[in-house]
Length: 367
Length: 258
Image (cartoon, rainbow over the protein chains, first blue to last red):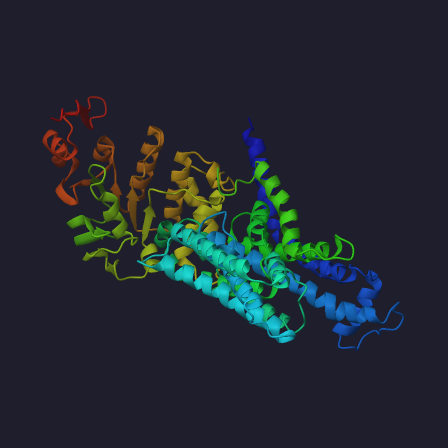
């Protein structure tokens, strides 16, 4: 048995991590993100030294005012870094932020530790849209074709989310149980339609594309795609940073929340809509990247506690770090080949999750 | 602040649970709501604390129209200790109690030193000082209930609504919780199931059966052998406890049903 003093000491330690060390933690994570982006663009099939990477980044990001590209071992390095790897690293960062943020928000919204950003049917809705576009010949050749898939995927993802919200909201109040179950049903339905299309498609190449799409990839990231993702995720981050009080009371259940002056249903709809938009945009450009939105909030909760004032920023930052490195592994783990990032996030994420399950300190909401 | 609920009708999925009830709680009065399981106590309380919208009837807390007002303005005067307080995510005790300050917070407003002081005082009142950083889910039932009470205290309410606040608690904590509330000297409406405790702590009782108030008055007026027999279907004798001088109830037996 623990003595009272050891419990208090432990508490104090816990508190100091959760409160006093929070600002340094956030700053450290920010610095680490910058460092990770730097590493990410220098690591790859063509290794480029950190020094050269820094030289190129400084030159390009300063609008070619500072430094120069002289002295590079290969002139193509500048293009590899600036046009291929940097947008990709930034996209990983944004996707990591977006998925972790939405994961934390969805877990609070449905008061369920199993929730993730895809709980509203977004992943399978997006997959259905993509399958539709890839296999049923909405493929316009070239770059426009890619855009078509993204647009269809977004329509599928967002459509599924709206459908779930409308069905769960029928007959009055949205309850978390209704939401989770409706999400499951719509997921199954969309999967069935996707499989139906795949089953009758006589298009091996297309089926392969669909399979890859559902595993997620950041390979298609370009400078042109970044602004939309950056702006939508940026707005969502700022919005949810202001919502910590409501998110906290959400976890008490709708009844307790009302007695504290907050009618949850109004907020619930707004939160789900914002989450669905952000996740839909991510899914449309990167496919479904599993596990991130589920585990990152749990891991972060284990460190900073449940209070959303700390959980939201810390989740977003940690998610960014996680996905930047997951993308690095996806690109480099197998020589001369690239793995879908969804495989990596699950391979890293599942053991981490298991470790947390076995460790006693964090109960995943259970007791 | 006094509470006046008039002609309340509350329906749940088309079944009338509360049938035309009027109750009144005078300023600083401790009023108990008693009655068998399923008689509509919780439903009535829920409509008073705005979780269920009554189909008919008015509720006034002082001058405040509870039915029409925003939850936020109601939560500044009314604290609630509800029945189900299990969480799916853990909070520390301090975070839980601090949430009692939510009604006073503007958009993006942080927690002030004053809020922390109110939280400290509330925890002290329920004798949980030093528990600030314990995790809520690891607490015992009695401690959890006292945390919820502290959260309601942190709302600095002038009226308290409690739904079976002593449920599942050891006798010590039952007495403790009721004494704390009694000592606050704010108007209180509490659903209670222990009749002796109700008699001891309440100034006034409303007795409900099948959605209706069948009797009301001081505990001595209301708690009679005949009424308990009618409402609870249990035979008993009422006596004056020779040691405490309080009203005592000796339950005899559950009558045999043909």
